[in-house]
Length: 200
Length: 200
DNA sequence: GTCTGTTGTAATCATTCGATTACAACGGAA
DNA sequence: TTCCGTTGTAATCGAATGATTACAACAGAC
Image (cartoon, rainbow over all chains, first blue to last red; front, side):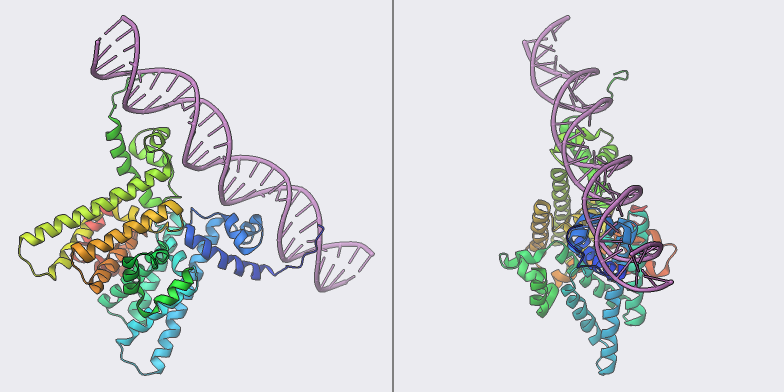
């Protein structure tokens, strides 16, 4: 048209920024609640282009889930590698991985989009992918992290608690509600400030 | 029309059955993913009547959330009353309330609709109600159940874990995946059979 | 029997949203 | 320059959906 294109990117670059934008939008609104147009605006492109680069809204959501799961496991594996290097007590791994999980809150959208996927168990395609992803995380905790059943369960429980607190957006009440603050401290520990300014 | 009405109920009775149906539908599909028509069919009435008896889809969802929270707290308070009657160690309350929480899985929709509410923190009205509900549960654990911060956090973590497992519908993999079974046993304990046939 | 308030639905409306189509602009190769 | 594949959008379509309206059927009061 009138103005020349000064923002041309390769399709792969576009797909990456769409994935980042979609993780935010799906994470906050959920699969059904989010629109491809919201994703498009967040990525700075038009709605039809989002659909064309991923085929469908469902395919985009599956890609978001896969990327979130991949990032999560990559962060965990990196933490294990470091932990193995410095010889620390085996028990320490529980804390180290927990810290990494909280750190991921900075990566807006990882926890939230994963949880939004888990909550879609009734969807035929998405539900199956979400279940498989959940099992993959469980398998990681049991086999690669070496947690026994009880420890893996406790770890997962702590993780689900933090994820739900982020999803319900409890950080917005941190300053005004002492109980909310108490709960957030209990869930995040000393890393609460990090979570709080990631949420704002 | 041709067939005479043989199913007339009072408006309050209708509201109750709509609430039960809506807890199921919203619980499985989520707020945005569920339609008022699906709720209507599940309740055996027409879609416009659902809207008229509750004003709007949003108001219906808020009513579902409130009812689920009320049922949850009522079950907990009943358990505490029984526990206080028989003199049991204070530590035992953690197990007793946990059992009640798992028992609620029989009441299809309580866990799921609550979780679907928590996941809607970005919605202005629903998000605020969900946060308030979450704090109310936390307050209960701290004040009425008398849990210290760590115990309350662990309890809530166990609860969120179970809720997410139900939401992702992991029970459908129990028979075919040993890992899924292991995870379900870890989360439900000996009450797993109860959860499994509630899910089918 | 008639009148009135309650229960309930069929029809329909306006909006939203994912997807499709047609087309434009740019870039590199020949 | 000409051509063609890639990147991108405007316009639009059709289906789904929450809500509204108009109306029907029944129950109880009188």
